[in-house]
Length: 511
Image 1: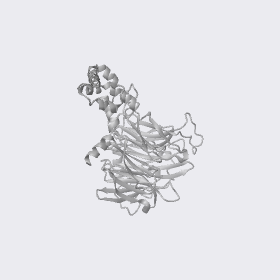
Image 2 (image 1 turned 180 degrees about the vertical axis):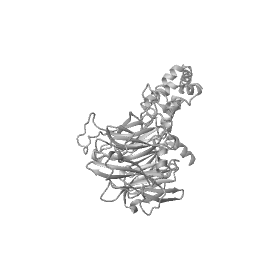
Image 3 (image 1 turned 135 degrees about the vertical axis):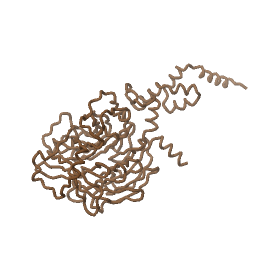
């Protein structure tokens, strides 16, 4: 029997069917994304209207604070697809918490195949983890046996058969460091070599599959020193500290500065242009500048480091090209290990000079390379505008804000500040490293405000803040899957963050 209320319900249903598309669109335009998706499942007509690009463009602008005049990346098919990437495929959800370390966790690095990651800590352990779900510890070595104070940095070589571990000696001179090289196989993790490295914040880096670069600081007098960069073989006996076999560079440090945080980038060939994959800060549409004329073969490298000519704080990026032909010629030479001393090293002609020196006007606290090696991302705490340095031992005060600058290594210029949201509070004399990382789509960094941060490379907007209970020292993307990110903190914890997409897939495979 048809009652009055049932008749009204039927009439209301028919009224919805009679509404024009424009009016339904207007209603949909006021719905949040989750409700819009539910509405699209009601019928074919609503589904068709809910796919409208203008709806998803407006939602992207509203929910992710995207600038209204910004265009879609070149290889993105639709605004709906882009919204889905930011919401469903960015690593936003806490997945696992690893509390195996007993002290502050300072650094994390991934293997190139994405199967392993390594953590360094003030508990003096180097731990290697299997990047499964859930992640688990695969190897663990206590470096106190080598008279280390703590481990501070690690890096896998390109084929993931060796792990470089950098640490600080336990003794009265805290600027001394050492590099340990471990071999990695599915069932073993063995010490292969040890190399002196000072000052400790040189860190060390791989030059190629089998050679690594270390530092050696020599005092030359008041506020002046010399920093040798040595090319070392990885394959040596661990019984004694290894001797370098090739002196790569010798830089002179002035005003109490030093070479720090060294990295090596592969040189790119001419003719490659920016695209949506390697785009940084949405600057793809800028008029391309000439690429370095010195570009050579695939074997050429850029040696990158932090330094400073004005004061003791690292405020400049130094870049020196390593030509493949030069290293092939020099590698046949064997410098005597006893070649030390500085009697004939004061002559300026004996020192190498950077090919490029890029001023950051602040204290540099972290660097990382984009996966294609075109861009260098730099964490920097800026000085006050127009600050003057009177005493090289007293750098200007640094801001609490951390700026992420991006340097185009093809054009050798600073593209400016692309991201700013994270904080740091320590003064100049207590400032420590905050490491960042970059994937093909995202940029992430630690911070002193108990959060890690995630930004989108194209839109430049902050997508997520990762909660910790203390300073977040380092972040690392899985290089094979940008939907997975690891953060490490002074709260002794290692946290793994995954996308909603990854969590859904992992949940379905465990059923």
